[in-house]
Image (cartoon, rainbow, N blue to C red):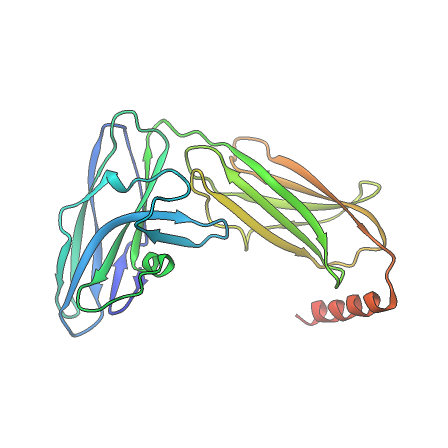
Length: 265
């Protein structure tokens, strides 16, 4: 559920699959948290997820190119929500013949008696986000747009990953980075489980940044990215080479300070 100004919208997300040419009905629910009567208005809008995982809901066409706004119809757009009461909003999903992959949209609820924040991020908070999949037509594909290893003044290594979903369905990204020295010895690994988005929409992108905080002696190193977009396929790999120079006194002090911070966190 998502709490907004005076009401909740449930569920947060609808995942629906049907054959091209088919129709299906479902409903979302709005719940009044106040003791006042709330006049509401529901509408279908575009939904896109940004590379850093933020959901945006607006009337503008989405950058991913897989709009499903025209595939959803509301049987009721004006809702009179009684005090502490609830109402269902019926939806109809229709996939035209020939539709492939996934389509995305959102049903947004607004108050007619109060001007709510119309920014895309705030609209997403009072919306049900919808993914519609045409059964049997999904194709998973992805590419690594870039992978960089950048040494910071503190000595930490920033690992920046940018990937793109080039298929027509969403997937859950699995990103693991291995650190190797100049002799190809593995020094450790990092998984981007806490910073990567829960999924990437078809046509969407994902940008992840991780910091390698362990101290590395002067020398040459290679960060190896293993990126998996399909559990049934082997991971894609890419390397980023970097060098750790001999430290000056100032840089040594900065690294020691960073090490103290790391041990106290």
